[in-house]
Amino acid sequence: MLSSQTLSLAIHRNWVDLYETIWKPEFFPRWASGLSQGPLVQEGNSWKGQGPQGAVKVRFTDHNPFCIMDHWIDGGYSKEIFVPMRIVANEQGSQVLITVFRQPLLSDERYAQELEWVRRDMQALQTLLTG
Image (cartoon, rainbow, N blue to C red; front, side, top):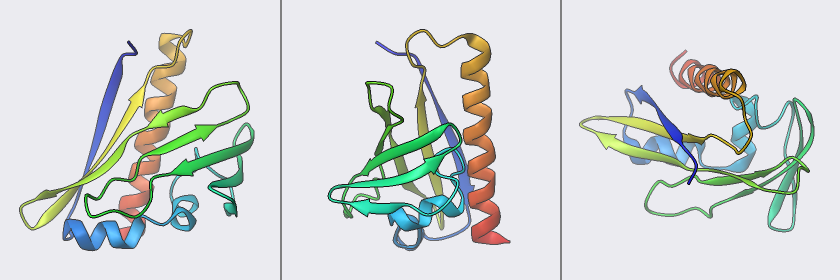
């Protein structure tokens, strides 16, 4: 079993409205720099882009009534990385939740860097939505 940390971001916006704004794969490169450094291009059930360490392929959950935006990232290293992402109601606002699993053989330092990267991306999402 992989260890994990779930990062949370509060957004003062209705949770369903927030989901409808950000669920589309085309929206992710606007804030998720760890996922793509430019636009994602759809190829069948996957999306391809240029990540910080090279080409990436990403699969996303379909649009759904549960505000789930899970995605699977394939950076060409023989295994997809599962990234659970949810939006949940928080009174009149929302919580964006992203779980980061520590991948096998990842050092403490590298895992801390990955968590910090996701925190920066979540801050970019907040700035994009509230700035």
